[in-house]
Image (cartoon, one colour):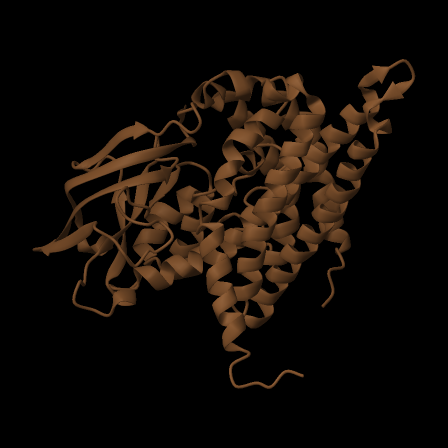
Length: 401
């Protein structure tokens, strides 16, 4: 396998890195102290700049206005954008819209693509993905209480969801609900498009995450579906195909997330090294002169490189072998990179001392909000257990000497 970066991608990555450094990182103090909605006018100006630079929607289809990058190239873009919490949003490849765009592109009808996909790629609207339930294990999407029952030409949806990220201000949700309870367990649920202004779609609250509820795109909604009626034409893909579609969505999504996490690691590492060089412990003695700090820096540099190469390899495997054959590689990066990120953020915070606890740097934000990386898209423990079972099956019947 060859991870050589083409000249075109070197240029693209250089442009993105410069834009993040000059245009976005200076906005972080406002991001940390103001509501996201209050920043939207200025963020829209930045998005217009990105569109004029022809860097908009890097991983989305060209026919809908994106750059059409493959998974491997977008992985590198995701790392560059991940250095700031607003990077993906400003470049039009933010979750959950990115995943919804992928499945609308693969499974949407022509009418659904015109109404939802085109304006979503263009950044004219936002969406949310409503799968995780309050009373059910989020890491097991075949156990679901939310139902969509046919009534005439409609589905009537009832259920209780949470961590429906970015529901606040979204135009529509893609909801996973049981439509065929008598089918085999992996064929019971479907995915259905629900406009957020539909009667019965109730945004109960934006869930406080470590004390911060957020707003607009930067939020996680709790949704109550109460006799929420939508046309059966809003079915996305085949009835009973919700689980399969979810897996198609989550595979590339984990590549995007993991490279974003590598970008976060890189940013935290840069801040840690700068602090180590500039923080004086005594005359002529910087914090970086301490062997424990030097060990953290060396270990972090090696771990970031290992994480980066693992994610690039997983992206290569998905593109060349398919999602099923790359399951182990994708599970490896999910738990490994999330753990490394938490470790490096913690080291960076420790090196900054009291400053690291404040919002005077981005480190405390990363510490609060990225702890969830070890939970969403399947808890680390679930990925470790399922991967171990697949590995052990490969040893059954073998004699090892």
